[in-house]
Image (cartoon, rainbow, N blue to C red; front, side, top):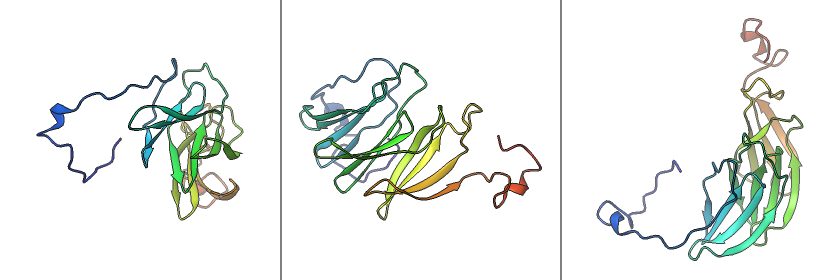
Length: 185
């Protein structure tokens, strides 16, 4: 992805000797915009057209578990962007604007929370800080999206909303009067 690593095992003098060890086929169709999440020898993958999450042995490429969360979508605008890992929970943002907490060892769903009821809204970035799952909304700059941009925190144990804040103030909220009477949209 975009992160920097201090690891030095692969460098400019030996990178040419790297060899392919295994290949894993993803869903056909749709956009695969997700960077795999790897932890403790397991690679977690997202297949966005079917909203399928897979855990793969990072050494061998063998499937450990799979959860076909759904829904299956044909709209190529849909794409999952992120997952987060905390303790034994893997958090997945499905294209239905629902966050799913899966047991990272088995793939079984622990809880699910719908973060927006608007048709075109999508789960944006996710990260866990001090036991709280921080979630953003993506595509909120699109005029077809009715929910405005926000960041929210959810309880990692049960998916309950803890707090939510707009990233751009709407009329009637603190700072909403600074936009020169422009409409909120």
